[in-house]
Image 1 (spheres, rainbow, N blue to C red):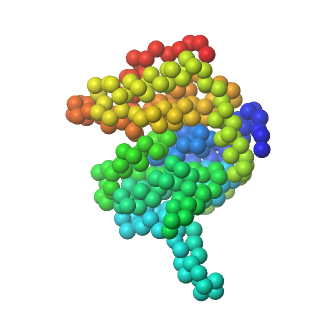
Image 2: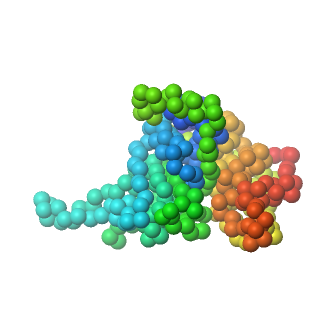
Length: 317
């Protein structure tokens, strides 16, 4: 199924509007989630409970017409609870695979860092390869596949730190934050009688989302813009403020995110501003700051902003 750029951009904007009918907050948050969906990039949201992470995910799944499953992560959650397992069927006289919640188009892994490291590892193959392995069999995930995970702040009770290898597989990471006064008033009004997320209209379907992803992947990025992107990623490996810099995978994901933003804007090419706008949500969560940076109270996002200011931004395309 082929789709025109103007039509794809229109659909993405309609999905955004449908989500905002249920999720009350900064429009930028919804846009970042959309860039993840369109750019085939899994999303990690770090925030305290009750700020609308589940509402955002469910509204986005409904608007995009994708099958949805929610995995509530707890310390006693096992890999089989996520992936599924083979059980004995007396009628068939054989083992039958019973699919777990991972086999959906859109998966919300809520409070991922409350799951044990063993269970967290069950997500890695799905996120990277688009399939899962159970009892020696490889099972493909539905296409398109998209995962949103939330994690509690690290000082919360009962959390396990996400390892660097797992963090590196999330394309985008951001926080929602507390709502403004006006947004909180709207939240209270909307939730007086019914849950607004149940009324989110379906804009499109899974096949169309797949076509939009394919179109986003074909968005043009010129050599100067790609060089700008690469210089930014490589600068994280030599900066004195950073102990562990961004991997080549980070560059791939930043390129995908920039292309998704270009599609959202209705452009067939990537601008340096696309790279600049998405540098922090793509790179910051992958970086391990040096001890002197942590002692000085620096945040990874601020360090990324500093690196951007040091790199010449191309003017030609």
